[in-house]
Length: 67
Picture 1 (cartoon, rainbow, N blue to C red):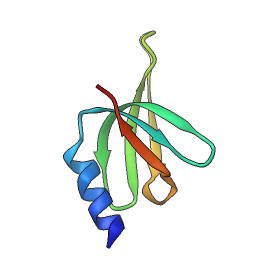
Picture 2: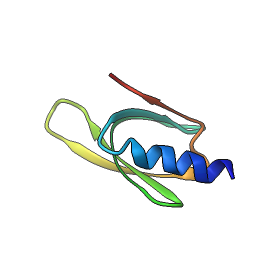
Picture 3: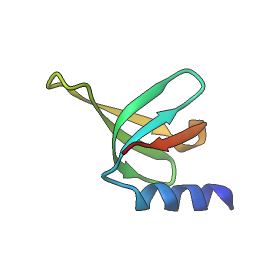
Picture 4: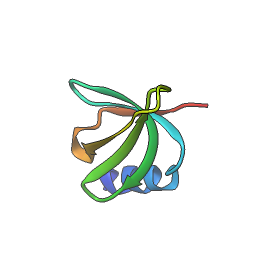
């Protein structure tokens, strides 16, 4: 039940800057897409490289949305 609410909240925030934490990684970028199993974040380093990072929704510890 909680995972459904979590996924719906992430889907409502698509296009926003976010910080996504897992057990061994911290990704900052724009939340681009969310499915039932994966979240796609495009890392924006400021140096012209935009790396796509796919994160399993089950692996996410927390998400912070940045202003």
